[in-house]
Image (cartoon, rainbow over all chains, first blue to last red; front, top):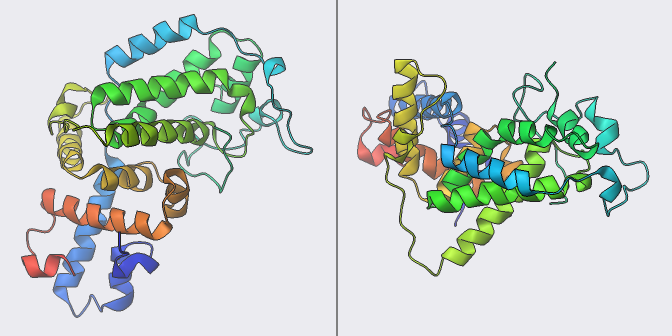
Amino acid sequence: MKDLPWSESPDQASHLREHVDVNQDPDAAALVAALARTRAELAAAVPPAPPVELVARWHAALAQLRPVTASQDPVEPRRGEPTIASSASSGARPGSASQSGDPKRMPNQTWRA
Amino acid sequence: MIRTDGELLAAHLAGDPHAFAELADRLMPRLWLVARHALDSQEDAAEAVQDALIRAHQGAGGFRAESSVYSWVLRILVNICLDRRRRNSIRTATPLPSDDFDELPSHRDPIAERELRLDVWQALAGLPPEQRLPIVLVDMQGYATAEAAALLGIPVGTVKSRCARGRLRLAEQLGHLRTLQPAQEHR
């Protein structure tokens, strides 16, 4: 897909603010406001709960899984690399609403999925 | 005391039989949100979430704490979803009905919030999947465009473009652009 003109800006609203005098262009101002409102609604939307069937099926599958322990980990941590055991208590990264006030951010990372 | 995701994963590795279930219950709504918008079929999405949780359960020892636990599992899920989409691309997928989300009640249910949610979800469901997923990651789950690009394996500019096109379409569908003339909406 060809990049849009605002691709060098964080989003098209920022692009408009940078390249259009929204004070002199009511349509540009309206577009900026509309996009901001859209993003605010997206951020505020409460995610739907997973279907009951998925939850039930997952719990059934979980019951069939054999326990996993750290000693079964086939991959040794690299030297100096934090392990889950050492980082867990420090809450190394946010990732859930229960962990910190900013549940959504993550650093540049390398996954081992 | 509420344990962090990392503590739950560590407890799982230490043999706590309940830790991963608690972790999965915590992560599942956000994983479901991504899978639901990455795949056209609800059944595919459910299977993808379950597969991701199973892989995370079995591969917990491989988590390196370089990211959040959620981001780690999300990466697993996104890979599964992308694989499924590639496999399904030769078949004709049945698009989601736009009111599909009506059947999924939220535990928070004030009337205004519910109306907002349905509007947003219905509008989102009307977008093409390639626009939905970046918007879910960036605008709903707070990932930076570069992070979303890394997750999806596409260039940053593509994420921005897809988000931009998707937001414009959402703004139209949510009624936020009604005061603009059509020719001015796509500047």
